[in-house]
Each structure stands twice: as C-alpha cells, then as structure tokens.
Length: 173
Image (cartoon, rainbow, N blue to C red; front, side):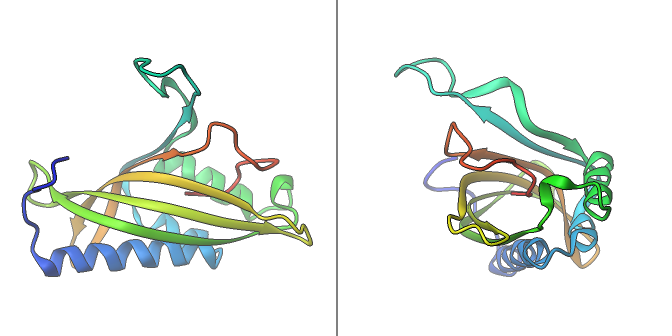
C-alpha cells in the first residue's frame, strides 16, 4: 500500500463501508446465519498467530500457524455448532461490539474485486464477568461485487496482541 493509492469512486467506497458495518452488526446481534451470507462460496477466513520476536526478525506473524484458517464450509460448521447446546465455550454467549475504523478501499487487478484495509476493535463480555476482553486487529479483506451487493472473498486479520487475554477465542473478528 502506498500513501497515494489508486482512486476508487465514492459510491463504491461508501457501499463497501456500509457492507462492513452491516456485517459487523450481524455478529454483534448474534445473527450468525446472516453473517455467513456475507462470504463468497470460495471464501477464506484466516487469523495468523502473532509471535513476539527480537527486533529486526524476519517475521512477527507466523508464516504457518493460524488461530483460524477457514473456508466458508468450515465457517458454516462453526456457526452450526454455536446453534447447539455443545458450544460450551459460549455458555453463556459472548456479547460483542465490533468497531471498524480506518477503512481504505483499493482496486485490484479484477474490476469486480477490491482490497479493503481496516482496523477492528472487538469488545467482548460474558455472563457476569466484570472484566471484558478486548481484541484489536488489522484486517485485510478482499470483497467481490455480487449483483447489487458485496461478498467477502478473503478475510485476513492480525491480532495486535501475541497473548489472547481471554479463556477462549470463540468469536469472529
């Protein structure tokens, strides 16, 4: 990414922003089936493991290890499990609030796809716990035009913390 990225028309940019806000709202309202409709059939959802390394090391995000590395099919399995009594890590269910900011939209080689960079902060509380969990992440999405709307083709999110400050990571970023 450069400071002077190629221009994307305002209507496209605003439409993509609105799509991302609505996608986050579906998660916050626990409408996971609706959330799944935001993903293309060939979608990939990945969150690499962050590793604390010495300064100037070659990588800080693991090139191989992932917290999540899902296709739409495996996301559907996760959602289906959340709809059962066997999702013990979500008993009681998490309450989340996704804050999506600093959204930048860039063209790709394909006319119907755009690269979307954003920052995401997820506030999560559970039951009567007094200390919430915060997850801060950089996201890089690729979205594809689908008729009058958008589909996520690829979501890559890198958590800012190397140690997740929660008992589990059963929410979506």
